[in-house]
Length: 396
Image (tube, rainbow, N blue to C red; front, side):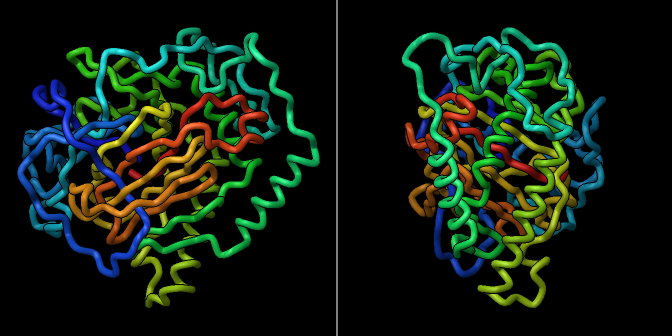
């Protein structure tokens, strides 16, 4: 899910045990993360956060004047962090969740014209000239067997089934502040998200393959909206280093879906847990950052924490909201960076996962992507490549 942190040179040159994850389950109370000596973990392919020991607590309880908090042009100020803040936020640990390599895991695809707009204002907005070397999540069909479009009755039947799932009791509170909404995104919304991401992704500031300074590439295509996240520095910047491009704004349709998902999660928490104040368990937020990742079936994501946001955002436990589209993924989570003790849950196309409040700093990751599990109707309407499209929203 959110990519955070930066590896040391030694970490980049090694590969090791498996990484981060999240899952269904049962912990009735939250325990703060305990510090542990750095070890080597297998890195994976979805989101992109790693950390070296000198920056493990970057931006968290280091106090004013720390060299790791000196602002550079285009970065967010972090000089207001105080050592007196709660210890739980000073215990954040991160390892590189990416599986590194020198191949681009499939190579770049030529971008063609943007996906046909569905009528919304943001879909019709200009995104600049198409970058012919950018990655296209929905490449034009070229030769091969012809795939027949589903009939109108088939599409309507699928929509009715998805609507019944959405109206049913398909939400689960996995732990305090962590909710899984099954089949929450309708087929129409999934198609709209794919088309918008495709349109933004083939132009300036779109999908690219992140690369470290030593030339190692991530098996991942990434695009940031709102603010760019830099893997080497584990911080958000106005212009990304690779080409100086500014990020696109988050489409209003995306923000509305995020807000609705949080409200539905809060309603589920109130119904099942009856807390005194649901905002304390799962706070509301308005997304200002969206990290869009596309990774293939070979991708994995090591256990990590999302912690590049502001100290105030982390202190309040403002949630991370994750949309899953395309192939299903096995997701795991734990209080510590220990996948043997992690719980697992399957994230399918249309699922929304939210973690905030006391669960904001959980370790999480993806252990496996299940091939050929994307809904046929989604593929027929978008030509989405094999793999998983993941959008994670947060408020800086």
